[in-house]
Length: 175
Image (cartoon, rainbow, N blue to C red; front, side):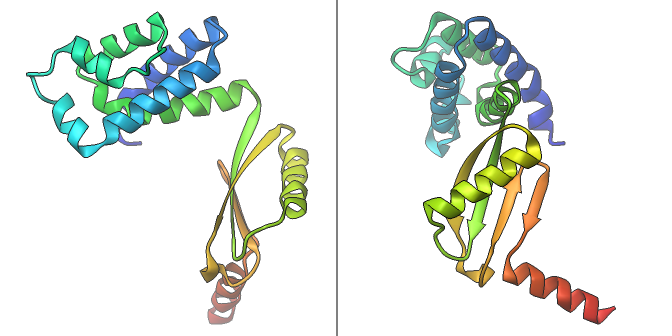
């Protein structure tokens, strides 16, 4: 585990606890995602590390317009502790905690060609049955797979691509 994730974990848990207590998962997700995108920008990252930028200015730069007071306080705490650079990791960990709390599995399906709605619904139904949770699917196309798809759902990767099958066949023949 990287040091950044180790440092970000307690902040992500604290943000999650604040969001849970206020029943505000979505607003916190949006605010953290925005702050993470801004903090990840190379020009902004250099600015955030500058001692010339005050904490209040850093919070104003990173907070969305309608950020709640607890969110602004959270960003101020990060600024006080010089942890604003951890915002991308904090946002990622927050989303993992949110998905677990809402019993949602996020799956990424990479296919050789674009999948139709019927195919996506079939994959979604199969994953829902396998995990016993709601499933959110994100898709992408990678023509190098030749055919089929690769499904990445957290700790589970299902490689049903022709490229993967050919690789496994090649390895079996080599042994």
